[in-house]
Structure formats: structure tokens, C-alpha cells
Length: 212
Image (cartoon, rainbow, N blue to C red; front, side, top):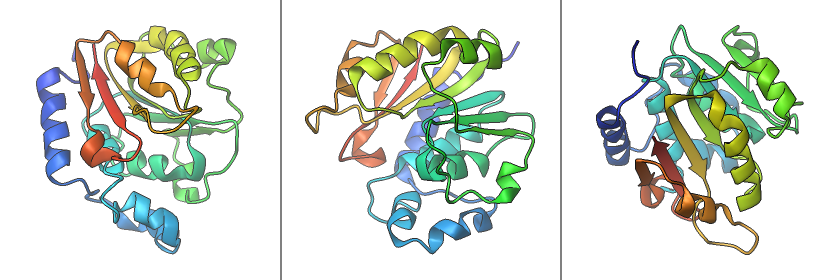
């Protein structure tokens, strides 16, 4: 039995990404559609110095074996970041209730390791149970509706499907705007290892990394 990732390994990945918060692409042509888009190219390539979490997704994926899940995939930048580093025996399940993955090429869509499920409500407990085995998810990124109630319910429903050493990522954990209340979940979460990497990963809204 091999752990997905221990805390020492996770801390090293976080530190390395902080020192160089830019994706080191394996196949840079995957992002060609994004390059031609001025706004989203800034995000993915961290040209504003405020979106280092895409590099973190990439680096974590390159060190993760098994199932990776992304809740919320609008535009597809997270898919690009994860896919470029996706290991041969790993799988990516990425889901949303809106079908907008505008930057994702057929090369990715047709890869049998990738499951783009844009008719999948993250709170659909029956579908979660039919799609995943208990304790099968190695890494999960929660990035749907930015409220305490939403992320709390997602965690409740998805936690049984996470491995004991599953790495969890949550965006928008700072109290920065009325109605954006995910920060409460971050404050209350009782995990052994909680990393607030906001300053270099997403310094206007916050970003957290968690390991039991």
C-alpha cells in the first residue's frame, strides 16, 4: 500500500511552487487556445502574479497517483493545468453544471483518462455514489459556488470517497467580498495540515491546501 502523498512531500511541492509559481509545461501546445485569449492567458500563465495555483495544480498532479477530481471547471483552465501533468495510470474527473470548457481540445476530451462531466451537480449524492468507490480519490479541488454552505455540503458528501491521505484544495478562502463565505469553512476545518498559500497562489481571494 502506497500513500498518495505524505506531509513532507506535500510541503516540498508547496515550497517549490512558491519559489516558481509558473507551469513548466510538458506539452505547451495544449494551451494554444488560451494563449490567443488575452484575459484567460494572464490567469493560466500567472502573468499578473496572482494565479500561481494553476502551477500548484500542475505540480501536485505530477506527483499524484490515482483519481483526481475537480468540482467546478468553468473555462477549463484547471483541466489544462492538471491534464498536462496527469500520470499514465491516473484519471481526472472534472464536473460542472454548465458546459463551458472553451479551452479544451479534442486531444484531452478523447483521452480515456479524462472524464468531463458537465451535467453533474456536485451535491448529487446518488450520482457521486454511482461514479466513485469509497476512499478512491487521491486529490480533490473544490471550486464551485463560493459559499460556506456549498463547500460544507460538498465536503460532507465527498469526504467518504477521499482516501485517508487525499490532498484537498479549496479556492477563495479569504473574506474578501459580501456573500463569499468559504473562509468560514477554512477556519473551522479540523485537519492535521492546513496551508494557506494565498499570498502567491491567489492573493486577492485566497487558496488553501489540506491533508489529514
